[in-house]
Length: 163
Ligand SMILES: [Zn+2]
Image (tube, rainbow, N blue to C red):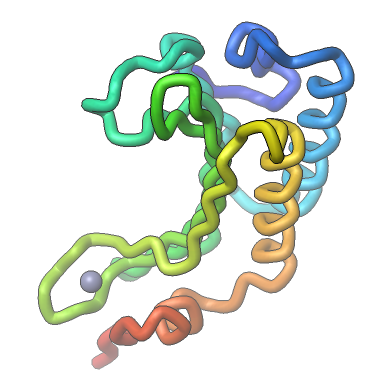
């Protein structure tokens, strides 16, 4: 994985079919996310040039490009918002927007994806369209982040144990 600002992402290397207008569109969408996460101590954008071509299914859904915004991580608790462009199959990209929280179940699952949207890129949805939709979801979450228990309650998961 490479890390850096969105301006550093080699978009046409990762996604060779992008037009210049597509590249502009991705930059605009990423800009809204970068603005929404301003002031938070979050990591950079990450990308994997070795995943520009489908690397095989053994990796699950390999990430080509992504961002992990850590909203909260202390006292063993965790709340993260993620935006990822992934491969779901050969020739089939998707954009995932995910809320990830620490698990407080009786059985420890480590973390849960409590609110996840997968937008598959295809004839009806272009990569820039899917990316923009994912970015809008992420900026919405960042504008109104709640705490991890809110997201766990929404998903019917146990709250953080206190005391
Ligand atoms: Zn759990």
